[in-house]
Length: 259
Image 1: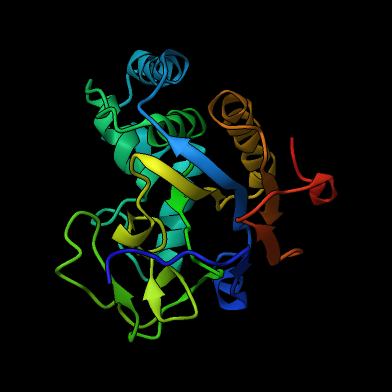
Image 2: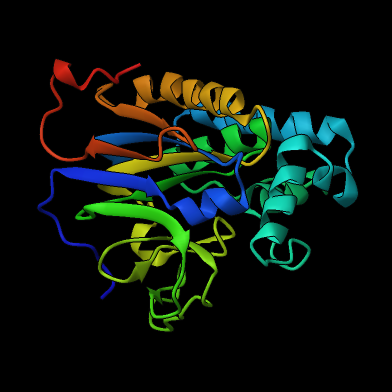
């Protein structure tokens, strides 16, 4: 199966208690967008990404300097806490920051991917868009080893996460990431066209909630120009471990979550 089916109206997002036991400061911020036309990046988004790259170039960081950025350093410790070697499997934020710190530019993909990359570089936190067409639930949890993960770009070569590996998974036994936020899966890729999206921002350090909230605000400001403004936001942590978000159909004023 390489595509998700349509037909669900809400998405329940949850953090498993076992994840919070291992990484008690974990925070997951999300923005759900019921429908958006993903297009090539407009000039405003391209400018945001270029500015974020320029700022990292100007900082003059090497690989070790990137690893010492507070948000990324905390993710390295979080990976160790769940049995992942961050030198071999750096989190998504570290991966793109390393690339830019070397003097490179990131590939331009589309408006939503480029926006998330820009915010990720600025915040030094993992930020990702996920196409959630047809998904009814998504939980950050340790894998049991039976889940199916379809690698991004090569869905014909399915993998099974290792038992205990933290993944974003659904109730149908599909894993949509590997090693927490090291790699995203093919089924939730954000490509051109109309999608229901979930944007995620994650932190793992004390006080990270404020930085997650700030990153969500930066995403929301740009989304005003990329969509009709209909969206819901939630921030999950040890105090609030789940949220139900509307991902299909009209979102009325009772959502109470548009920023």
